[in-house]
Amino acid sequence: MRLSARSLVFVLAAAIALPIVIDAQSTPTTARSETRIQLGDLLLGDNRYWEAIQVYSQAKAGAAKEQLVRASTGLIGALMQVAEFTWALDEADFLRGVAPQDHEVLALSGDAHWSAGLFDEAEQLYRDVLAIEPGSGRARHGLAKSLATRHQYDEALDWAEAALEVLPEVAACHYTLGSIYERMHRFPEAADAYERYVDVLAAHNGTTEKVSWARAEAGFVRSFGDRPAVQISDPGPHTIPFRLVRHKVVVRGRVNGHPAMDLVLDTGAERTVLSQRVARQVGVQPVTNVLSAGVGEGGVRGLQAGRIESLQIGSLEVTNLPALIKSPPLGGLPTAEADGFSPLALGLSMTIDYGKNHLIIGQELPPAPAGIELPLRQHRLTVVRGVVNGEHPRSFVVDTGGEVISISRGTAALLPSMTVRQVPVKVYGTSGWDEGAYLMPGISLAFNQLQYHNFSVVVLNLHRPSALLGFHIGGIVGHSFFSDYRVTLDLNRSVMTLEDL
Picture 1: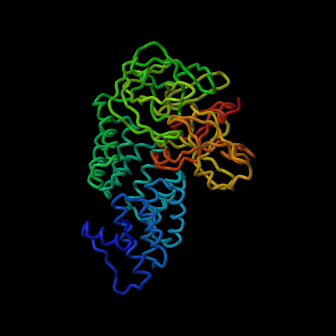
Picture 2: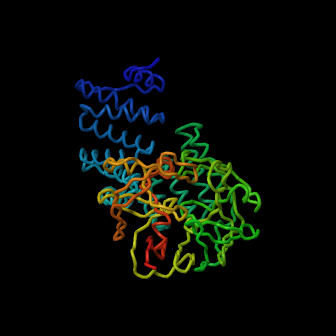
Picture 3: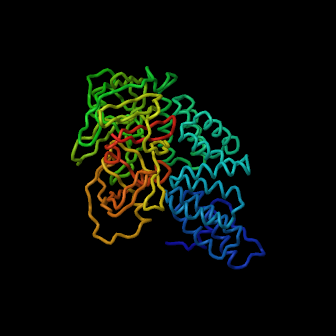
């Protein structure tokens, strides 16, 4: 039997003893909006996000200003939970027009810009809020996340702790604190924060799949014990020769002292990645299962996580570092799944010299010579900002394991409809084949002064990776973007420099 919205109000209210309250002075239209807002709040609290989105949207019709703010606020929260980040940004712009002087609305707009991958705008909004209301927990938390993407970890840590002073029952604040500690390689403190995140999440959601995955992640970080994690014997810089194989940078490396093997430089990976076969050969045991996401029909993929005792690539040696194991392996791919590593995931900067076939890795790199300079940020993955068709700024993942320049379906949806037949292309990634990938011609892309006019891009389904990362991935830049340059990714300066060869 299907319940009407009116019936559902009373069912839910009775079930959790929260009656719907209507002001006696309300008009019929505002009373209807009030009913829907309170129903939306109940649905949102019950994690029934799509239903909440529908109800909040209906509540806006005929609502008074105060109700409009509440309905729009709830709608934005629900939209971000289901990774409808572009819609959330549009709704935040609407809400700011309704309540331009409300600092909490401004902070929520910061969150919406963050979720759209517009990190610079989000950081400015958080700073604007804190100038008005220094005690805003949402703005403190947002600024902590933003500073961490620019490797300003000490300051980010201060703001994350300040956010928790105000919002101790908000699970995301504990997660952010844990992620900052993890990026600082302070794993025991990261595990403490992640465990508090799990406790708060479970208190609000009970035993759910999300709680189970979060508990597994906390347990994995805890498994490193008190031994210092991600220890780098020599800060470098280290110069390592590479081969270019099928548009991928390949180096030789040793895992746990075993014979040298090929490793693909893959900045599109959050951690060092081993195939199931190689993990068994080199003695990397799975500790737990974790969620990963990438290009492919599956979108989200469960993998195993383990600990590498030592990784040696040329003169670079790193000990006690986390790794992902591609288990179970994917079938039906044209080539075997590669083993790969990313210096960026280890907190190291790097230069790829395609002219000399040299990879330079270090904690500090000398300033790159003059070239095209792009600001970069690192939130699990490293991104640079590009502008599509002159009006749509988006964050593009820097992926040396990829081959082409692509945009997401969400970005493509903002562009004029194609006037030519859609040309399918065969694309596979870490989550299998992307059966819906196609070529879109006639696109203009700008990365500062680097311009692509009337350019063809591949359109990929990046919705689930975006949902896992918590922001809209506008696209991916791969080998064809980098190969004509000497490319430096400097994490300490938060810039990518492209020098002509």
